[in-house]
Length: 268
Picture 1 (cartoon, rainbow, N blue to C red):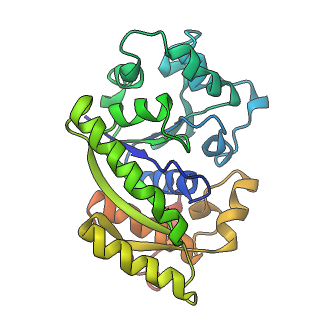
Picture 2 (picture 1 turned 90 degrees about the horizontal axis):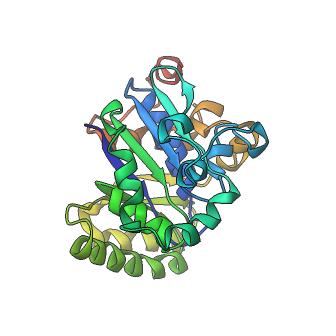
């Protein structure tokens, strides 16, 4: 049965969706079968793979509204490896529609029970909030990844998020684990970035991934081409970092970017 990992942070602009998109692509490149669920009404994970609302595809909202099965929402990105269930702005109204549903916190969990066996890993890109949609993600997930921008203001929300995770464990999902915190948008020349790195590792210890995602223009540029950065520019330091993060996640050794055959990894 596949593992379900939610990528979550209630603060926007910390690299949440970028992390979800790129680890999904990087893990799929290692011949794992991956499903990415875009559960954010902004739909940026969908855009990151070149899927736009104008394409007229079924989305996760269509499933919630009862217009299709969750399997009918699945869009194949790379045959036998990577699929996505896209989102649209309509998803913003789903919180209102779910309020009166019985066991509303378990809606996504119950839906995934029918398809989780088909994948090695399911990645969920959560909304940048702690509302009912995110709660559904936390109840459905086996574990979470928390992208954290390397600035002190971004650290303020971390304790709130961890408190929410603790409450979910106590009330709804006792098996919810923390896969790890990943530091994003890191600039080695900036003293504050290094201070945040040290502080987070001091408080969170081994719960922080060794890999740090650097701030590179390719990361912000690649979505406009409908590609993860690991496809758009596999030789970018940011791509190396995301491949190494994926390797940490699935328990393999780090890639040596100076010697590895990138065409083999990226090939789809």
